[in-house]
Image (cartoon, rainbow, N blue to C red; front, top):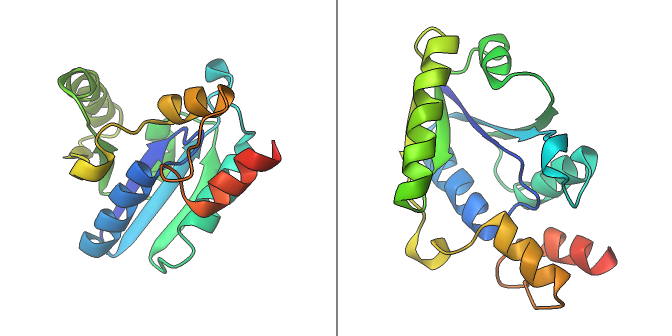
Length: 156
């Protein structure tokens, strides 16, 4: 069985992330969504909260598993016998950075490839950073994030 992994901080998960997860779940029999601890990014939500928000957002996708991690991604990939890494790329800047990560991950995992998914046009401008900025300035992010995330932001 082909298992792919979609790693990220997901602070918070956006409809753009969810779109990539759904598209991956159609193509691959098993999709792992790995929520990175990433304390250096000073996330708005704790790791536990982010994992739960992703789980609530993908509940209808039976072939998607969500978990948090603090280790090196390469270690998780080896332990979970992952076949490929899914990465979203919105811009050429994203692509340049992701290309470097792909080469590094290929080296650290003995050849696991990265697959780049462009965003659907509807979500091409959405990022977690933009969602946090809009939220922190009192703007409405209801159309940019799954319902559980919007509810969690309102409760914060």
